[in-house]
Image (cartoon, rainbow, N blue to C red; front, side, top):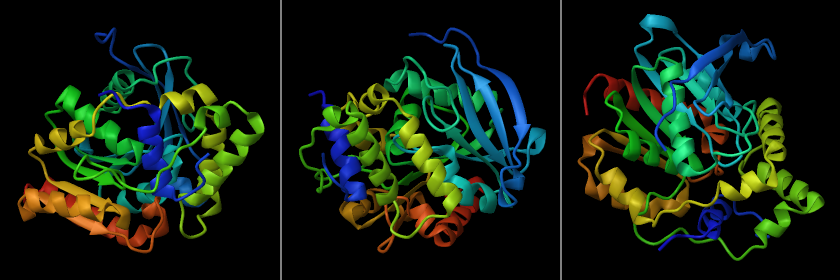
Length: 317
């Protein structure tokens, strides 16, 4: 059965608890690079751009060691209509130990708004080209929300040999019953009504947080959400897979997995923990955080990621 966009929309609504209304043509090339001076706190991050094989200019943020010495990298993939900048606390804190990269997917954040290519195949190819453009060697891949599904889809399609671990943040992994909380919505109609769309996106951008977000992150989130055209926002939710695809993909990965979720996914977390040896599964439940738990409780999240990454890169599964 091919799920409709409502399947993904239900996951997003449940997460936020808010209103329901072909072959690779060429290798990517890096086109420009510039340092950021947007804020004192962001002084250690740099902006980078590369062009995909279908001609779309994508942006990513980088912090930490670069060049030939950067042999261990944490790669962050954001969620639906969300920017790389949502991971600012991770870029700054985790880069004291590792190289850290965060991608703005096509039509997100500072990347080009693309006319096409919002299907899963093209977007997973974007991830592969991103890793090549950034010269990523051993890496841990972290996905949040829609990024969980895209990270799993990427490893299923491309089988990266230098993948050392997965961090999956607050989305279903196909275990047990689907998360509850989503309900019917006139989503396409809302997206195509300018006033309703703006209200929806602004509310969505607030509801991913349980606590007030730092202003620079909150502003980046709203700007990215409002920048995504209606057609893109709708297309991104059309995941053409049954739920079993995510479960089976994860079962086939012989790398340590960290699953970090809010309480709505605790049953899936328990199922994952029961299936994998303790050294291959790290599960954390953030009881008092919102969907963007890594912003709401960044210190706890970053400490856990550092511990997981040190064990994973050291080979101590």
